[in-house]
Length: 214
Ligand SMILES: C[S@@+](CC[C@H](N)C(=O)[O-])C[C@H]1O[C@@H](n2cnc3c(N)ncnc32)[C@H](O)[C@@H]1O
Image 1 (cartoon, rainbow, N blue to C red):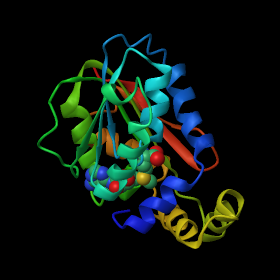
Image 2 (image 1 turned 135 degrees about the vertical axis):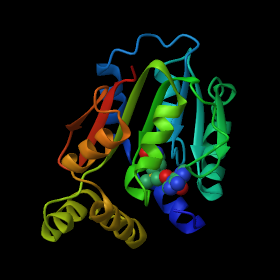
Image 3 (image 1 turned 180 degrees about the vertical axis):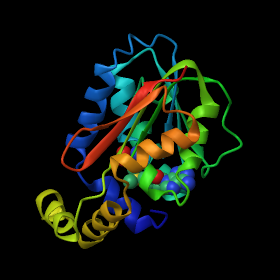
Image 4 (image 1 turned 90 degrees about the vertical axis):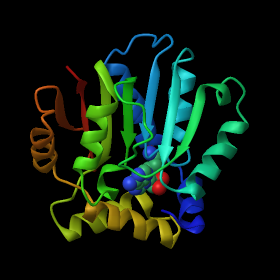
């Protein structure tokens, strides 16, 4: 996703359905008004979820991190056009693991569709653990690896049938790189997060991890 062409194709695609699913799952965790709360979005991409989040929670702030300058350029452009949002977001260009992130500082940690990009998934779980305040709410959603290559191809046809080739290819590769729920459960156990966070299947192609850090 570091190439400008990939970033533009991704940013132009319509992710309303999964991104609204993400916001609905968050609301179901009853986060309250999040007055003055500090959120962290890991792998924010073009910031569509950040914008949706800050609209729903007008008293919250968000640090949004992504490793791709091309993605953050798009995020910057999307946010600049939105009064009332721009002054509550801080964009951070860095790759996980990021030593620049504040430790024990966040009330809420969000991430969508980052986990399958990481060569070492513990990088995400270690960051969640290090950056969360005690009691912080965590919501991590990602694609879920289909049971067969045929099922992956069928998902690409269903959800990206008319999309540009670059997006279809990225979606297919992402599905194959994604984890199964049992693998994510094992990652949480290894990170010592299993007493706090649980894995749920939330659509035909997504899993989500949520809970509060003790
Ligand atoms: C599929 S996009 C998801 C973007 C956004 N969260 C969304 O839901 O639309 C994955 C993002 O993760 C970023 N990314 C991949 N590896 C990363 C890393 N190690 N550190 C930070 N960001 C990373 C990519 O640049 C890309 O913007």
